Amino acid sequence: MEETRKHSALKYFRACNARFLRGKRTSPQDRAPKFALLTCADSRIDPRRIFDAKPRKSFSTRNADNVASSDALESLAHAVETGAEAVVVLGLSDCKATKAVLAAAPGYPTNSEAIRSHPKDARDPSAAANVHARATAKELALALDGRIPVLAAMYRTETEEVEQL
Picture (cartoon, rainbow, N blue to C red):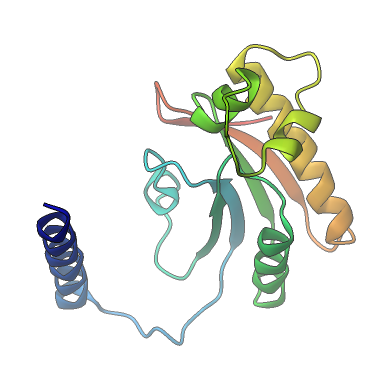
């Protein structure tokens, strides 16, 4: 069973890349991102699609609940060095990671301390995600020494709208 799932996923992965290669028209060396994005790894978010960003025009860093981890910070600093003009911290209105942390889900491993440190009094997951995105944007602005603007925004899963916070 496991081997069948693995084979099926790999076959799908290869087919997707083959479709991409058939439609490819630009040089991969042409890299000038307009913005960098720190967002949740949730599969419901496709950053390039929701911003209608052309290839190589955005730089995405993703992890559970858009946490400004050291790895994320290194990636975003690289994006700034390659030309990104702004960083957007994109929260998710229906974030499962935030819900798990607020519910004190047993054994919830990743980033939970960073998530818990931001929401403070927010017990509603959407409100907590807003507070967390804003606080993360402030952290990143400090870490990037104010070199470029860092904005907080929220992706509303129910409408697919992005709202600047």
